Length: 368
Image (cartoon, rainbow, N blue to C red; front, side, top):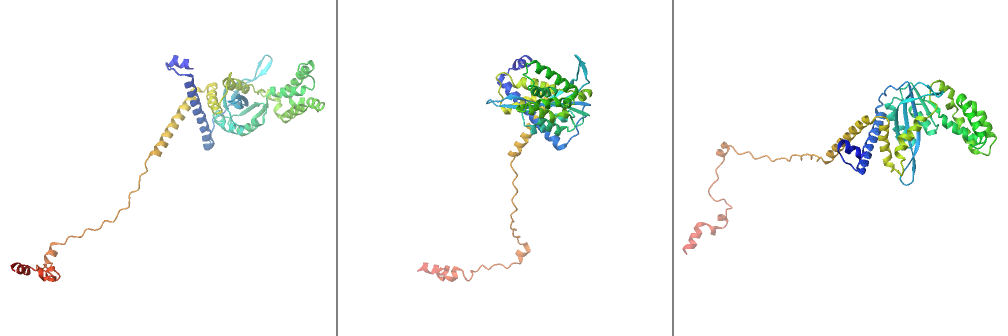
């Protein structure tokens, strides 16, 4: 990537700088998608019109984390189902316009976060939603959350694995007896469904009660009998395999997160998955616009918050103090009519109280 930038833009960047920039933009895109989920949940906008036949498949893949830990990344694949075609004598159904949504999260959080993609692709308004999966319990909860009426199909490859487990009672996998029995059983399963095969499977399990794994495999298939009506599914032109999401696990998730010597810090997984989904879904230009818009919005919001914190609150003005009224100057008429003061000393004047201090007495003493 650094060589590409230098060749095209003339910008030299180290591997560490590119890694930091990628993680930062991935974090912004993840935050933008999470904010969109909250908006959808709050405003309940009308979804766009979905296709006539939509593929919805979900699965998980394990990725290595720092410290030797492994965690499951869950991936949603959405697409449009085309008409069946004959290839090599087999009826094949192809899906187009595939898009991906992946997160390292628990099942409940993942089904909520995936709302941003199911809303964008119109899962709610699609005429038919076909969901081939491996039949895991958490996947059934995902379908109940997004499209309860989706046609649930047990991936034929997974069903074949459970049939093979029961077939181990016939002989070791390398034996001719096992291969012959498995070929006949899978033919019956594909053209008659689990209902046609269950009597044979129950007989094998009953003949080997000491092998607990046989009973578990049989119980798995019995609980999902309705999901194994493969003849009807093929007649409707629906896929009976979950190859789309299994390919997504390899190409979208594992090809990027399971390289030689890679161990991911948990906070860095979802940002990388966000960008990886955008690239593999051919939505990079659209995703980059969302990244820029959300980043600018966050920058503007941080500026407003910072400005609000630093704004000095206006102090209330003190209440007015009463100002004493100035005495009104007397009028000229009042001054003219006022009695004039006498020039003679008053009765309490010191000259009256101390006669020796009068001028005449002082003059007499001076003559002596």
